[in-house]
Length: 179
Image (cartoon, rainbow, N blue to C red; front, side, top):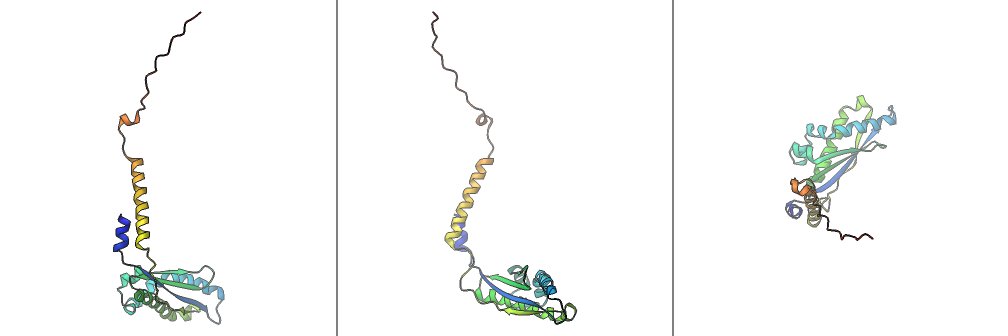
């Protein structure tokens, strides 16, 4: 029941992803671009908050920090920036603003790192929510409630008389006559 209520009252969540790529300079080892991509991926959200990406996206910094996730590829110098929001337009704006902030802030360090961060793909506005629908939320809630009830039955306290086995008295056996 609680899953159905949750599914009905929760607003749908939309996700949009923007990509940036780290490109080595002329005198830079191509392998270092992968290392810098990993490093930029770890600090992307902090850099974006400091670079006023929240203002550009039209959200507060806390929303930007909690609503955007950065992920890096283990074998390509690419960073994906995925934003989640209750509005498809806001999700796309958040992802794009973090990508733009990362590109701008990395240009300041380009001379010392030897790599350049470039926009690879802008986020598109999602057409469908990524959050579960009301029936799925109800199903998950029902399963969770059943699991919790089963666990409660397993750990409930028992009285001493419930733990003692009742052994019936032996029935009288017929006597055999000896010969």
